[in-house]
Length: 126
Image (cartoon, rainbow, N blue to C red):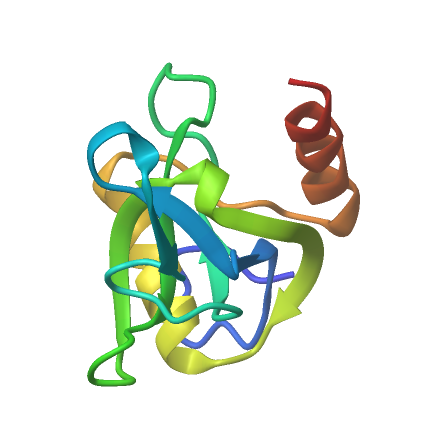
């Protein structure tokens, strides 16, 4: 596999999930909202590795924005993501965004399917 800083990287293993169908919002969680403000329900999001010490409560993701359908990178609640799985990513824009987001903090993405699955098993135990 190519180095993560390689501009011509053709693929990358990643933790992928989907945005929940419905979530509670508003005061006291009385309102039920479809998806999130920025992502429609079911939107595939590409999750970055843990970047701060909150136990992955808030995660940085890349996904297609609800309004523009362009890819965006943002921080969302991990409770809004379901159906986590390991996948190989080929989309050049997603690869670029993953590379930029991790290099900003001097981190790296996953190197293999096994590494992503180990991370996933950690998430499911918490």
